[in-house]
Length: 264
Image 1 (spheres, rainbow, N blue to C red):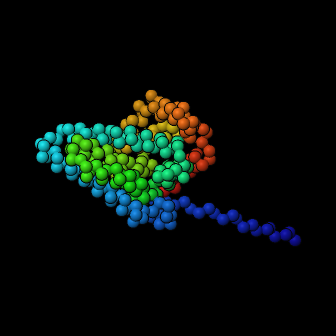
Image 2: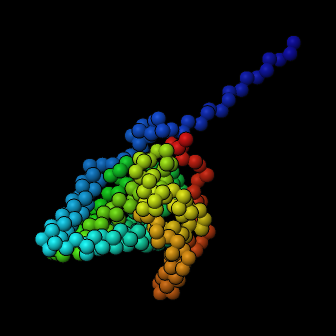
Image 3: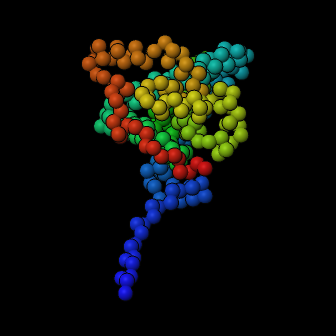
């Protein structure tokens, strides 16, 4: 009589990745991407500071019957917001750590973002932008109290507004067009907001280009003329500190070979 074949227990199946249908449950189960009332309060305070600056600009322009100069100042604010986010993004990607005073949490968040960039789209709105909102609050409110210059407020309102929401533009650049509102897709296609295709280059080795995250209009110029490489050489020559982009990224820096499980 032949022995009965031994039955083996198959290994347990891995948990199914989250999909768009249970995305809400993923967020509820992960406190690291949830908004808190503190986050919402900072976002509200940042928006209020920007709104005050915008109202002061409009009021002064009405009183002086001069609109052209504040509008031009606002255009400069939009253009320089893209450059400003690029310089900031470059700095926290390449220097500092989680223990760096003031900027430590943002540095840690941006560095871990390279490991799992798709997880960025799990973040709730206020959680995503509250760090920038806090900085905007402290920077813009004093200017609102001490100046009534419409040119200054035209620049500040637009510049700080685009900086504040730059992380949301960054968020949209990690999502697929099918999941984005049509007006966002239109602005991305027009080059007015950062597109997914342009930002993708930032997440490929050696992770040292396309840092700007408002519209990305500066990325080509900065890469062509090696502006960040020049800054890195200057920092190294003066302080002896090497940027992370000079070294082969370690496993904690490299993107995991995982497709965003929320995107079909």
